[in-house]
Structures are given as C-alpha cells and as structure tokens.
Figure 1 (cartoon, helix red, strand yellow):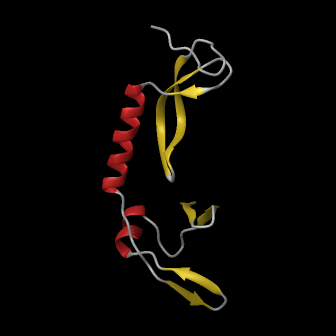
Figure 2: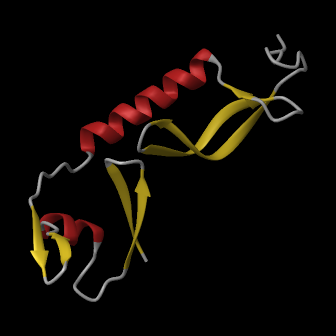
Figure 3: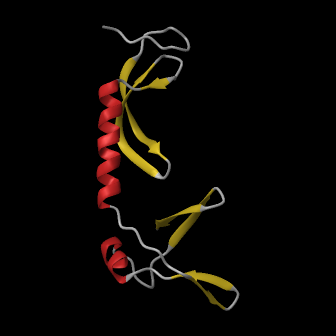
Length: 111
C-alpha cells in the first residue's frame, strides 16, 4: 500500500536520513523515513517505534554528570570527569568546539 504525503498528496518513498534529531539533543544516524518528491518527511509507525527504542537505548547508556562551574582568570571552567575523558579519549592537548543550543544547552565536539 502506497503512503501519500498529507501536505502535497504525492506518493512517498522510503529513504534513509543521514541524521535526525528525534528528541532534543539526541541525534540518531541512518534513520529510515518516508519522503515525498517535494521533500516533506514523515515516519511510519514502525519507523517511529524504532527511533523511540534507539533513543531509549542512548538515554539508558548515556553518561550523566553534574559539575560546578569554576573560574580561571576571566574565563569559566567546567571540569571533565576522568572516566568521561578516558571514554572519549581526550586529554589536555585535545581541541573542542562549543556550539550554543538555546539559553540552557551547548554541545561540545572533540576536534
């Protein structure tokens, strides 16, 4: 049975999205979705359930730390726990990029 786009009424085809942020801050890679020729994206119930399962797995196995912010000269410092540094294979010589996401979040990417 063909799936029709609710916006443009054209037939949708299954595609694989390189990345999709299913929940705020949790980006899934290689996500199956339905897309119409105009680029509208939707998900079947099966695809949505798979994303929920993958998101729950990430949440269960994610490190979570609460740290105080310190001051060094005129800059603020967040200490990285040793276990997290080891897991991410980062050291004092590592470089990171900080990307603000709204007023209460930022992403730190290791370069």
